[in-house]
Length: 198
Image (cartoon, rainbow, N blue to C red; front, side, top):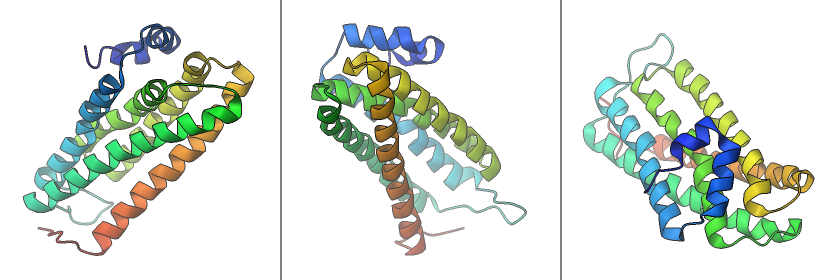
């Protein structure tokens, strides 16, 4: 069943990583997980942008038209799915340096499951206050990093010492990808790109 590892990643991550390592699914399963989980931030941000409005400090509430919010949500969804797929490719390519030989499926599983807490932060958009989303976002990033550090030695079958350096490299690549996504969002918003505020 899709999403069947979700609870285990929060309640007992190491045991869940071992379970994932014992029962590797196919690429389609991991891609389905990404496709479903990426809906959370996209749908929640659409609703917040079109119906609730964003509050940034003491200024007026900022709201987008429904068409603009839908456009932004679709762009966000595509960016998140492509971003996780790119992270999986980086995980796969970096593995050789650390004497690991994961399959594409293993790399995709690692990328999909470690990005899950970050995508779950999307629920915070239902309370669209910048300080709140920032705080919840930091917690999501921290837990994603923890999942990565705990999952790499298990899924990649490498010693803890090498796993720490490998994970640190992957975190750096992930942060670069996240920065690129954020920069593209700022450019898209700054250029107007048919975005209508109400």
